[in-house]
Image (tube, rainbow, N blue to C red):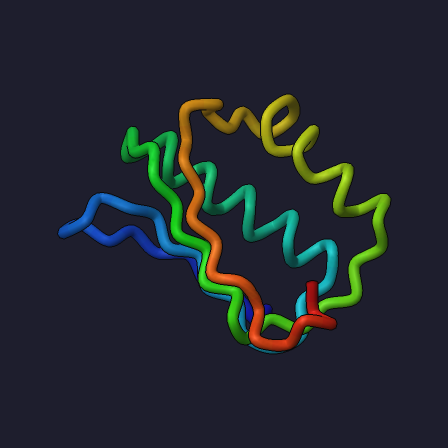
Length: 92
């Protein structure tokens, strides 16, 4: 597991940090964890720090993620996500 999710009390934001190699399963599990915290804390901001992520997701996994987020895992559609893009352009 090369990711962690935490809640920043000061800024009332959920922070999801990726480091190193992450599979599609890792992305799904980390997303579920982040959604659980947003629902529990009733916050609508998520910061995804993905500068150091390494992944080789296929397009099917990428297109599946929004469906899973909103329909299956119950992510609030009011949530705003800030994404710090990977340093390695090939990691996208």
